[in-house]
Image (cartoon, rainbow, N blue to C red; front, top):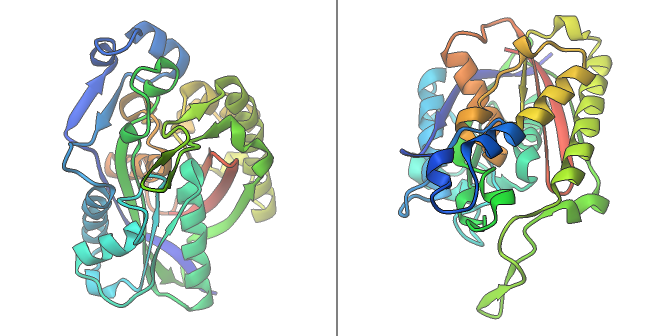
Length: 319
């Protein structure tokens, strides 16, 4: 049986770190208010000349190095992003060019904060079917450009960054099972309704969010999909070594862990320093957990995330 196994991971955070105190200088808020409601202490903000593809390419280069794989070996590139460089072409093709890779399929996946789950599951299908042998899967976002910096309900939440994994075909266990879900009836709870039309922006070009609505739906959906993916894979919660969740809000992560009967000691947390980096948050947290030695080869990981759409999903894998 062929599995898609993680060969290496990488990440990139912009140099500019914006603390809650820094944020309090531009909008009416405080470190105490933000920390109590979200667990976030800081986030990173892309420089004016940085694009999503720059963040993605930097994370990809780290992942390639960690995997011991050359760019020429990559035969599939998927970029999960809700903040592409431009309307088209796909950011994945721009990353492809920056890495000097030519000819292989390269495309974007747009499922907002669940984007990395969707991209990872898609790459897994390519590898299991034999359509690809070595895939580069990236989550990259510059959310700082689609938040209203005068809206303290949303601007305190988001940050910029990128994370990447190299997946390779292997006879050893890798991705064990995945589940993806979506329900468009809830799109109004979290959206950026603006669009390019007739040379301008039609509608609001900033994140619009019903915080309470998102919280309630997210906890129930993540707990259920986590239970489902473990049950269908025949793995109990006690066999999961680490959970790598979407880093949206500490309270959502804590409530989901409680529903799944998992100790917070098993949770990889980066939300305090990264904020919500949307599709980049899971691969960023995964890379940090691997590089600091907590996540080790042979361990069982549960990855899960939810984003606007609503779209959500979970992936169970052996690292």
